[in-house]
Length: 215
Image (cartoon, rainbow, N blue to C red):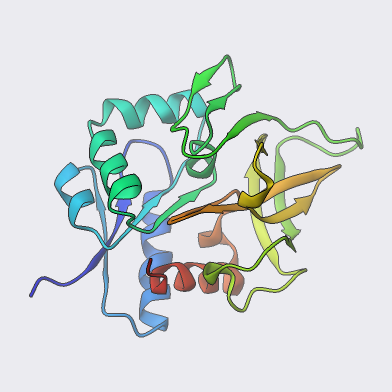
């Protein structure tokens, strides 16, 4: 029998090695017999038990990279039809939106009714990008949040934020001169604005919860 594996999607955007290392560590800590692989092959998307989409850079560049990779049809089939658990990280979460307005207007995956806009904190002394540790606030329970409490700290690096039209998709928020979406979920899809792979114990706990999550 072929061993189950988690796929880190390689589309030219994102800190892939860091995500792979954190996922493998979380799997080992949870006692899960899983491999974590980095791949740009559509056939691996079709076989993976869980999918992770990291993202760093501009929204439009990341979306273009995903489209040019040739993996998008396989990704949509796996996530939307087969309901494979999916985790988007940072820009990987933002790509779930209908549109991103970073350096122009760019179409996203459209898996969530949302747009991505520049952060405009009410306090002019707050610097952009929003970079560093921030504590989170729960809005609803979810299996990936098991053991994560209000006030837990996660590491953020971003200049743009998601605006949700559907508040039922909101899992976590943080404050940075106004409320900022920290995590979202819909069906088998989860996205986090912060970097769990850089968020110490709380981040590893969230990743471990995701790897244990089945639909």
